Image (cartoon, rainbow, N blue to C red):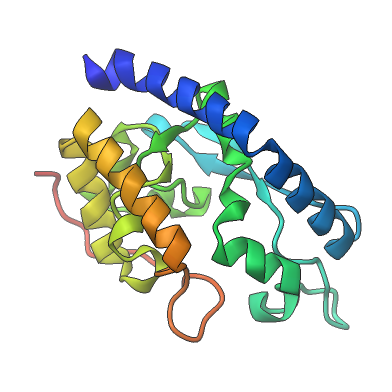
Length: 206
């Protein structure tokens, strides 16, 4: 009942309220990133959603597109702008995904939508993270985010899939707000972004 009917309504209502209330912050962030990224405040990328269905995610763009002499993008740490660093640290880069929530591609709470290239790398248990819509925040995010291993992250994701409830969603949302104010767990120590997932030993779903 909650997962299929109440949760989508809850998502849409809360997403709309947040968009309206934080519209001045969203507008200011867009303008600052417009300047910092040479006219490109938003980042678009294809990500897998529920059942692996691919959709187009929108986030604030925190890195510029600077390239080396061979035309390759510079490392993430070299492309992260000062404005982008602040936006990422405060998690403001996630706010445009509220549009994805309103479109029905995402939920407020759920496993984070990762890269499409990871789809064939999951073992059977890890692939269960796609049994629900991906979320702006999730159980893995409030339990370490990028500071934990991929295996721990996926274990938290599957735990959420098996325990979806209004109480858990509210708990995760409150924990997310607390972590944003503490700016805790955003990145792994001494790195700008999470190291890419390269796959885990295959195992059967429980």
